[in-house]
Amino acid sequence: MHESATRDGLCQRLGRFFHAEETPYGLALMRMVLPPVLLVAALPRAMHVREIYSSDGAAAPLWENYGLPDMLPVPSGAVAVALYALMIFCLLSTMVGWQTRLSLLVAALLYPYFGMLDSVSTLTKYTVVASHALVILCCSRCGAVWSVDAWLAGRRQWNPLTAQAPRFPAWPRRLLQLLVGLIYLGAAITKMHTPAYFSGDQLTYWMLTEANFDNPVGEYLSLFPAIILVVAYLTIVWEILFLFVAWRGTARIVMLGMGLCFHFMTWATLGLIVFPMVYCALYLAFIDEQDVAWAAVRLRRLQRRVLPVRMLPQWRWSMSGAADPSRSWATYGIAAAALVLVAIEAERRSDPFGIARPEGRHQLQPLPAERVRELMVHDRPLRPVDKLFSFDVGTMAFGGVLVDRCRTFQHGERAIVQCSVQHPHEDMWVGVDLLDADGRIVHQGGQILPRETLRTSIFYDFSQALAAGEYWFVLRFDGHEVSRRQIHLGEGSKGAESSDPAFALR
Image 1 (cartoon, rainbow, N blue to C red):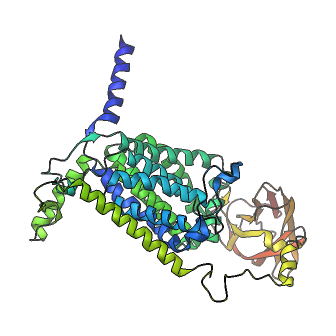
Image 2 (image 1 turned 90 degrees about the vertical axis):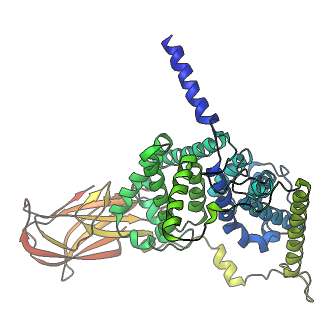
């Protein structure tokens, strides 16, 4: 009896969770924000469609990697330009909510199609996430409010406090929320199987190499490995918790706030642009009717206190009834056809292959023989210094990573001498010598660095046997000097003292 009641209660809660009716304000906001975000990357490619996505250029279809050369057709140049222009038109019409369902359906088909046609660069993580979001939006009624469709239907829905807005089941919004949470959970699981993430090496390499775009603070932040490690652990905890707590109340505000900060930092430190904006657009699925009503009340108060003119939420439509649906369809079709024809003509006039030139098509020029020989040589040895990533001296480590850097020590202190190398590398001997100011070797130490390890640390205890003054830690790879760090040993004394200086291997 008790188990049956519990099961019935759970089913009722799930039913309310997915099927409770609401006005899709959050989905309408996502419908307006997601398309311009996708256009940030789509528009720069518009004049290179023939080269990237057609059989006239260098298309790289994803399905060929799986042994399916004829799974989907690779369009010709003119067809690719027409379809790409149609995709852009549908994204724009989705943004304003004009023929929303049809626009979303076409965009949801063409956007991943072009991504799969160019698996080398266009197909990315955000492409996959955005394609899922477009498909779910197709199944929603996101065009029922704040859209041209609503305006043409004669509905007054700018003010959520006074308008009688239509209501629909909430399951599309819930699916988008689950999509975000499950992606974060999958990302956390992936990070758990990536040791370089927990050591901070992965993030540091991305910050320094600028593999995506220029980042404003990535190189500077890489100087503080302790911050990188703390952020890495906080991120994985946040990604695991997001799916379970980001639903209501203060927890939702905290999770979404951390998410906004996280995605902002992916731009500032890693140079990502479209990826964080896509996720910020998906966060709009967490906005419900209560949030919109709360914002409307405060906007109304702000209007009354600051602005004497009427603001947008109080506007009223001038039209008295619904527009003729046939005219809307005809206008929509004419606008789409016009944009497609303009795109085809503009691409033809740009003539990227030089077909209309008097001298004929552009021809690939052969490389000079010296350059060919340089590219074909594979036996040039890698210099030992090219294997080094960093070499530092400090006193404190966190998670196996040196988190402070110092150059002054006292008798009785322990120095951590740490070096990191580039991946991949062979098994190698890492030697660390201590030299005095005259270049004489005071002590030698070292250890083997296996090929699967990127970092090694050696501990050195300063005892009274060493005179105060300037010293050098010299790093050697297989006997070759690759770097050195100068330190100063002071007159003071700290902690326990040993009779002889010694290296402690780690």
